[in-house]
Image (spheres, rainbow, N blue to C red):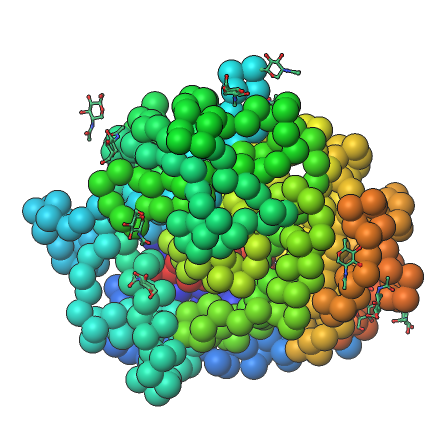
Length: 527
Ligand SMILES: *[C@@H]1O[C@H](CO)[C@@H](O)[C@H](O)[C@H]1NC(C)=O
Ligand SMILES: *[C@@H]1O[C@H](CO)[C@@H](O)[C@H](O)[C@H]1NC(C)=O
Ligand SMILES: *[C@@H]1O[C@H](CO)[C@@H](O)[C@H](O)[C@H]1NC(C)=O
Ligand SMILES: *[C@@H]1O[C@H](CO)[C@@H](O)[C@H](O)[C@H]1NC(C)=O
Ligand SMILES: *[C@@H]1O[C@H](CO)[C@@H](O)[C@H](O)[C@H]1NC(C)=O
Ligand SMILES: *[C@@H]1O[C@H](CO)[C@@H](O)[C@H](O)[C@H]1NC(C)=O
Ligand SMILES: *[C@@H]1O[C@H](CO)[C@@H](O)[C@H](O)[C@H]1NC(C)=O
Ligand SMILES: *[C@@H]1O[C@H](CO)[C@@H](O)[C@H](O)[C@H]1NC(C)=O
Ligand SMILES: *[C@@H]1O[C@H](CO)[C@@H](O)[C@H](O)[C@H]1NC(C)=O
Ligand SMILES: *[C@@H]1O[C@H](CO)[C@@H](O)[C@H](O)[C@H]1NC(C)=O
Ligand SMILES: *[C@@H]1O[C@H](CO)[C@@H](O)[C@H](O)[C@H]1NC(C)=O
Ligand SMILES: *[C@@H]1O[C@H](CO)[C@@H](O)[C@H](O)[C@H]1NC(C)=O
């Protein structure tokens, strides 16, 4: 069953209400009770009724204030913590809407759906060099885009916007909100055969981006390929496939052990003009940057859900300060630098992310959250899954990892990779979102960094802190940026400086940190 946005709000209100209304004797019973209530709540179809969840978020501030004034005294009264809280995973994030749910909520019959054109979301692939030649990871989704009348789209968009009616927004924000909403209301196509056509990509590339690190146009490589498996139940495809060394007017593909250059190929999904992407053939050795997108490359404010939803749904995407300049310099000055963008945003909105990135940052390969990662633990494990996949694909390359402190999955996965694969991690850069945003009440856990060498990581405040670092030669730490890493939970707004919270406080903080990640990656899926 799909989860509805209103449930999410109920859930958050539930948390706030429990702690606020009842900081006294027996909050534990209610804390235990509410997720059950949410799990069994009736799913209400989208309606015109405007919700007023603002209260939720006003309470959120109060909630944190109350935590801050005495985290231990409030939390020590919680008594038995349910196991799903202790595991850091709120159990109401389950079961995403499927194409069928979208189809029935729009009242479309099968014939109407069959008549719609097929679209393909083609994520920019990377490929590695193997004994069989180049091996390219094709991944994406096959879906149909229903035509939804504007007034219906407005209704649907209002489900996502918090305490804002779409009709009160400026016209360009209305368009953006309808566009985002439409891209969520798609009908994924299972059991589809996917075929692609490859050809050398000229400098401009199919989507206009030049490609990071001076990627080059190969002499050959044109070919047609049929992917070996049909799409999954959710319309996804994700498969590594060897490609042939075909000749073109200017020669062949270069072998991965004969060049340091990254070669660019256009990838067109057959039967649609919605499935264009650029593939990057990446040699075994060299440097790859893996960058998160939200709150590091664009302003999202994921830690402030009402703002986060507006920034994601209605406002045009805006780069974070002068990050584009930092990446452009790295792309120009570091030879053969492979850019890989890895976001855990839902697949449905990924097209908008790719459009923004490729207009604003160097071209590169792309990863997003596949639709089968939909339950809570999968949602929280997807980042590590995708990171391990690219690390496994390029065991000899060195990686620069970039993100911000508001992702609890990043705060775990990045330092863990440095421990597990010390020869592959060169630098970890984390934007300290608390430094520039007093509204960020979200705790972050720096304990994973305890045994890492300070020379390989940095918590930074503004993009200029990254200026002038010789990252290609392993200079990852700018001595003029004060580091205040306590190797524990930190939340300056709440006055938490890594002092070990009580056991109960610890799990609850961790739970909140997971919750924000879950909100960030799922909030816009609650149709
Ligand atoms: C390059 O790789 C191919 C395929 O793995 C292999 O046959 C060839 O010997 C390699 N060449 C060099 C110079 O290592
Ligand atoms: C959203 O806008 C982009 C850019 O104008 C367009 O290419 C895309 O088709 C739109 N998506 C939907 C679902 O309307
Ligand atoms: C996909 O290809 C297989 C094998 O070629 C074929 O049997 C099947 O009918 C195709 N499916 C669709 C939906 O075209
Ligand atoms: C893909 O389309 C091209 C051009 O229309 C066609 O030549 C090719 O046979 C198609 N490839 C497959 C595998 O269907
Ligand atoms: C493709 O073949 C050409 C000519 O034999 C050769 O020079 C080149 O190394 C080959 N490239 C790959 C990717 O195997
Ligand atoms: C995809 O590429 C084809 C072939 O170059 C082109 O005709 C089509 O307009 C492109 N589609 C988009 C959405 O850019
Ligand atoms: C999702 O599908 C991919 C293959 O497309 C598979 O490797 C992965 O394990 C699946 N994940 C989950 C959580 O089912
Ligand atoms: C290429 O990538 C695949 C998929 O991740 C991996 O299994 C394989 O070991 C890689 N090959 C090499 C030579 O690194
Ligand atoms: C993050 O910034 C805040 C506010 O400036 C600061 O108090 C905190 O120590 C910083 N955290 C780290 C890990 O440097
Ligand atoms: C370090 O950070 C400061 C402050 O943002 C900046 O002015 C400087 O360019 C950075 N780089 C180096 C190598 O000091
Ligand atoms: C640009 O990047 C190079 C390579 O990391 C670095 O050496 C140089 O100082 C950077 N320049 C600026 C202005 O950041
Ligand atoms: C570092 O954190 C401590 C609290 O643990 C605080 O008193 C101090 O001002 C912080 N220093 C900086 C440079 O942020």
